[in-house]
Structures are given as C-alpha cells and as structure tokens.
Length: 201
Image (spheres, rainbow, N blue to C red):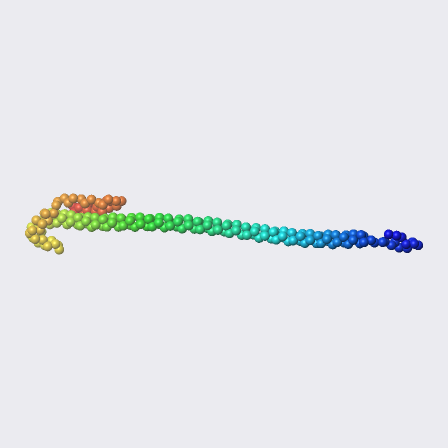
C-alpha cells in the first residue's frame, strides 16, 4: 500500500491474494457461524432429548407408583378377603357349636321328658298302690265285721258273702315300690301316709 501526497487518506493496494484471503476468512467465518448454529441446534436437540428423557423418567416413575399402589391395593384386598374368610370360618364354627349345643339341649329335654314320664307312671302306680292299701285296711277294719256278717251293703260298695274271701286274697303286706332314680327320689313315696291313715281308722 502507499500513502497519498499532501497528507491525504491511505490507499491500500489489494492484491488477488489478499482478496482470496479475505474470501477465505469470510468463508471460515460463515463456516464457524454455521458450526455455531449447528452446535446450538445440537444443544437444543440434546436439551429436547433431555426433557424427553426426563418426561419418560417421570412417566416411568408415575407408572411405578401406580403399580406399587395397585400392589398395595391388591394386598389390602387380599388381607380383607382373608379376614372375611377367617370371620366366615369363625361364624361357621360358632354355628356348629350352637347346633351341637341345641342338639345337646334337645337330648337333655328328651331325657327330662322321659324321666318326667317315668315319674308320672311311678306316681300313678304309687297312687293305685296306696289306694289299694287304704281300701284294704279300711275294709279289714274290725268296725265292718258285723256288717260283713249280716251281708248288708257297705256304703256304695256292694258286698256279698264272697267279699271277705275276695278281700282276703289281697296280701296283708304289699311290697314297697321303689322310687325312680334322680334328684326327686323319695317324693313319690306317699303310700306310707295312706297306710298310717288306714291304721288310725
């Protein structure tokens, strides 16, 4: 380059090499800018991928929490079902126990009924026995001998000459009937009172 006379502006002499260098530098600048844009694009892409990966991670974590929640729910229902199963089995055992208890009470009631019927039959037997003893003692009392000799009727009992023979067929001492076993033994034995009443007559 050369300087103009009189202090004028500088004048540069550009050669072809300088122009080529300038073009090369501009090309490099454009290339660098392009690389910068590419790098920025890659950075945006990487950031986008990072956001996508984070989104996928959050999605996977959400599904993991959902699966864990479903697992806890299923376990809770399993425990609930097992609890109800145990409850139903307990109710079944209780019902069977009540059934056995009711059957036991039924057998006990039937036993008591048979015992009461036995006592009733025994009481009726004792009553017939006591009435027989009382009738025998009354009719064998010496008070009635004159009437028996005269063959007159005794109150409402029709007597005949064969009546003493018939009455003499009754044993003088009837055997004592045993009481049925149980807590009420002795209450049915009432023939002693009638025997004593006959003796008093």
